Length: 99
Image (cartoon, rainbow, N blue to C red):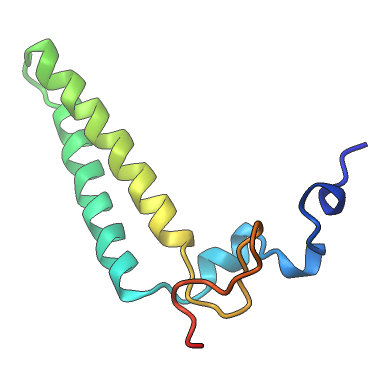
């Protein structure tokens, strides 16, 4: 069966689950990126849902904007400045930590 400890060498207690990461404090830079991502997703969604016929290229750009904005927002939201978040590969504290 799949054993996370054997693959990463880190105990499960050291790995933050996704809910804890989403609720943890987010650094200011990533809050700005999250808001930009939300704006991109909104613009992309508006282009895709336009009630008029748009050229195919514009529709494609709208789809890419929506996807890129969603990914940017999701990644920015789960970035944390919590000192307990260690890099799985190196064990070095995150960029937001004060050493």
